[in-house]
Length: 276
Image (spheres, rainbow, N blue to C red):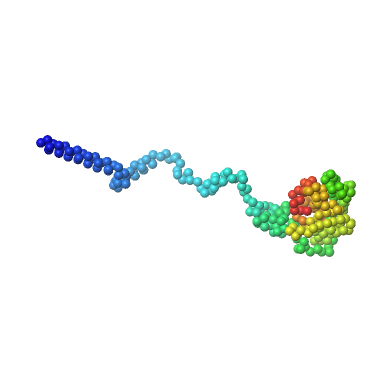
């Protein structure tokens, strides 16, 4: 009898253990083991939860950035360092003006083939000597040659050159002169210096397609400091190109002036790089 009771008790315990194991496995299997009905109930529950979100709560779309916003924010730190455009990419009014009047400005350099930057609006663009035709028509303008700045910086001048500097700084006083239609500032200077027996020395510079004036009246570049030399001015403007490329017009006022400070002492520092 005792043996039978033990067997019954053992059977009950085994049955209980099996039942417990079955229930535990069913719960541990997760949502993928549930049938379609249970899955549908879960969806309904989620829908109900979403319906409780306030109407004025920002949508997911409101947090999405456009490509333009992302690019702008990504470059925010660089905005102050990077220019909005480069001269070669966006033509300025001077570029447009120069091109309209015959200059061929290269996109990669922002200059023409002779290293000349665009001419400021309202001023004449360069005319290449080989493209000009000089006629017999006579016109007049004024011209002068001065070296006043040397008097102001006489201590810089080579001692051997002191006696060459006029007391008033005037080498060729302003006067009305005749030129021929089509001539350049250089053509006029050569003729007038020769006519008045004033020394002149120049050098042809193909890279700038113009003559470069080295000395007038035996006063040369670097004679009064390492930043000294000759520059020309027409109607108050220092051209940013050589004198062989400046075509004269009736009534022009041409001035040759000596600088001791790369043009800063005569108001032509910008042009001193290309306009001698």
